[in-house]
Image 1 (tube, rainbow, N blue to C red):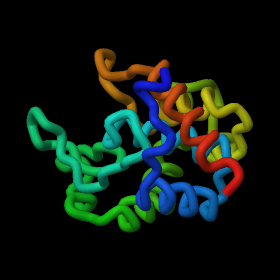
Image 2 (cartoon, rainbow, N blue to C red):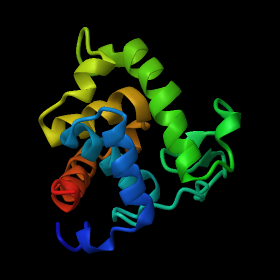
Image 3 (spheres, helix red, strand yellow):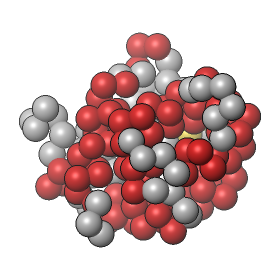
Image 4 (cartoon, rainbow, N blue to C red):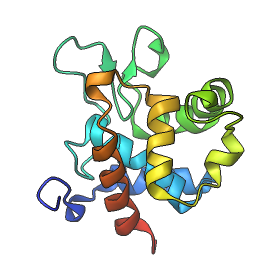
Length: 156
């Protein structure tokens, strides 16, 4: 566990994401759940998030959440702040309010923002917003990464 998830790797992007998500009204637990997913998507399972990362195989996914650039062409080449702005102001609300049922019946953005369990927040964000393919869902990794993010940032 500790060799895969190194909390001492926290960089400016992870700190920016924490502040941005908290300012957007997410509980500490929900913010950690989102960052835990980002750690899997673009951080090599660390808090060293790379907002400029393209997927290694096809080059069709980009950034903090590995956005599909065919579905979200405007996200391509946006910096971390631009991606976080899009995530909080447009994407997350539309996805959670439309696809919340993938996590639980009646699941809404307001409920997500107020989640109090870090691991549940990580899985909820993965199931509703990331929607990784079966072979890439790694829910246990996402739960563990979210706990690392929470423990790293909870007092900030």
